[in-house]
Length: 50
Image (cartoon, rainbow, N blue to C red):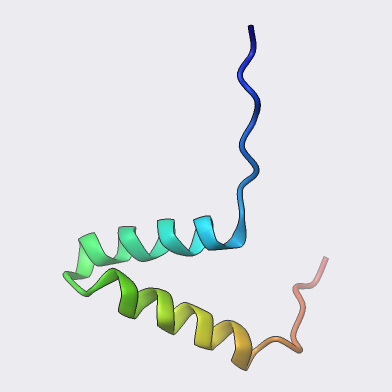
């Protein structure tokens, strides 16, 4: 029986990046997540070139 795939959310990506950065820098995960969210709001009008 094949297990159902779990959808990767934006919040999961933020948590992964934040925890990885926290391990490398010694900073708090919540603080890094907050910075990521603030930067997303700051640059929300920009899109990636395809």
